Each structure stands twice: as structure tokens, then as C-alpha cells.
Image 1 (spheres, rainbow, N blue to C red):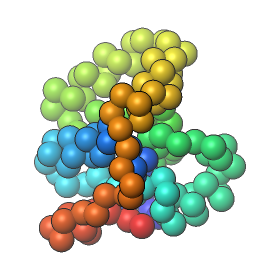
Image 2: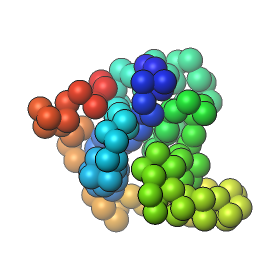
Image 3: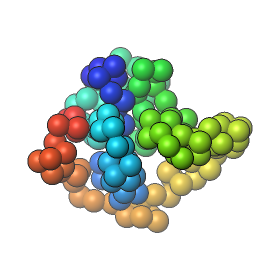
Image 4: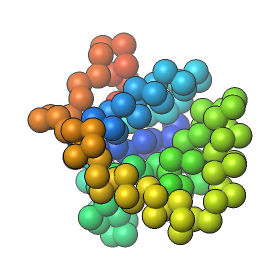
Length: 135
């Protein structure tokens, strides 16, 4: 895992909301730099073993050149990597105090399976996108 090769988005591979977010990111990452790995995969397992603070985390994590970002900081950090108007949206989001942002993020994360459903297995990328997905 080398964030210098491009940011890595760790996502819940069985969550429909998370998979929808991955689809959104794939559609809006015009530079094609973002890479993706499920939280249930070997790449995240290795990262978690090096970073005990990630134990028990079951939603979005962003690893980039600036470090590891979780919860609302990960979501807003992704806006920075998309560029364009998304970059500005991310900057505006940073004006909201982090405790409030994380409180909202946690409410959505806690209810995501009930509101959006879940899959039986992690997504399988198309052959064209396979190079951007890590195990």
C-alpha cells in the first residue's frame, strides 16, 4: 500500500451506500488517481495491523499523502482529490466544526444498512476498473 501512488479509499464492500459512493467517485475522478479497497480486504487488514487506532472502524477511510483520514475528514478529503467544484464543497465543509460533522457522519454510518441495504459480497470491479482496486 503506497498512498504516494495515489490516494486509497477504503470502503465497506457490502454496504450499498458505500458502493454508491465508490461509483460516484469513479465517475468524478477525472484524473483516475483514486484507488479503492474494501475494509474486508487484505490491504486494509495490513493497514489496520500497523495502525491500531483503526481497529473497529467499519466505514470510510482515506489514505493519502497527508496521512490517514476517517469519518467526515475522509469524506471531505475526497472532495479535495476530485477537484473542481467538489474541492470548494470540501473546503466549505471544513467550516463546520469536526465534532458536529462527525456526529452527522456517525448517524448516517450507524443506519446505512437499514436505510440503503447491504450486499452479500464485496463488489467485483469491471475489467476496465480492476487496476484501481486493491484486495
